[in-house]
Length: 377
Image 1: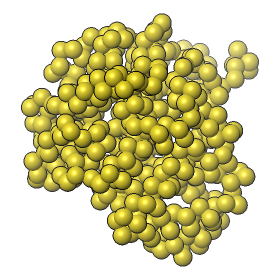
Image 2: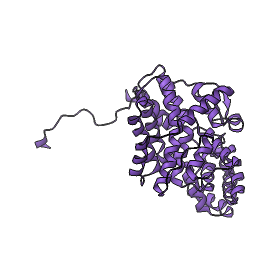
Image 3: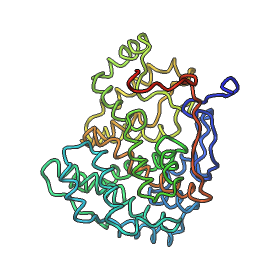
Image 4: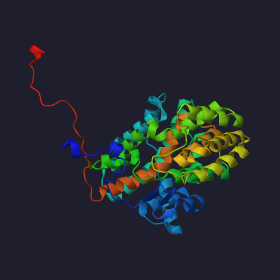
């Protein structure tokens, strides 16, 4: 039997389900949500609109958007005990604290135990608002500050920056955070979304699926690229060093962080929107050298584009966070803020006509052998 079985390690190239959410064409470098180009959504929509689109399948009318936005804003609250839990584990990594707090919410909020599409939508909206609150509260508590209360007058992205920093962001900074969330909102059967589907396949509740997704995103091979890019930029130091850095890396057959993607063979279609954002924010913050370093790396990597080593979205994200003065260990939690609607709709899709996801592994251990009693070993 083993001679006739093809192993697709990492399930590469295996289709396990149909999905009506995101369409990724890696060979062309194209991405769409519900049929809408990521370029249109990134330049014309808000994160709230994209959340509605992903969860409900259509762009909202003005009235639908207002109602959805009101739901998000009314959910900007956490049980008092969550702040106690955050305080108890404040010295932990932010992803561990976030995962622990979401898991605790499942035990504290009775509605979290309800399954079914309507419940998943309601719980998903609540969690979408609570996740940035948890991250911002942890950042405040671990630095000896009182968490900043949410501002119902602000958008999702602007409120996130307000809770994190305690100052109202500029319209440009809020819009850039909004675009960042849009670009990270959904991306097919990536590791965390697939893991969430596996969890929901067991008929678990939505909180269980999100906790599973968070645990998976925390792994550096999935969510750590933005942090690694920022470390690379700091190591390079100046734009003039970029070419030599790339030459040394490629000469040692080492990867250059922020280039290449499991799916895309051309440039990640999301990258262009973050590129301009880095340039503009760098000018606003008086630190244009970060953008110059990134572009120096891009120029040095151009000869390798034919091999599929093109820039990806995370190449620019880390520098944006750095310009905001955000600690590196918050980069992956920020990814989670944006990915919430994608995880929610992946869980909803899995629950429709649910089936237990149970692939096979091909045994390659010892041949059948006789058991030896303990005294004779």
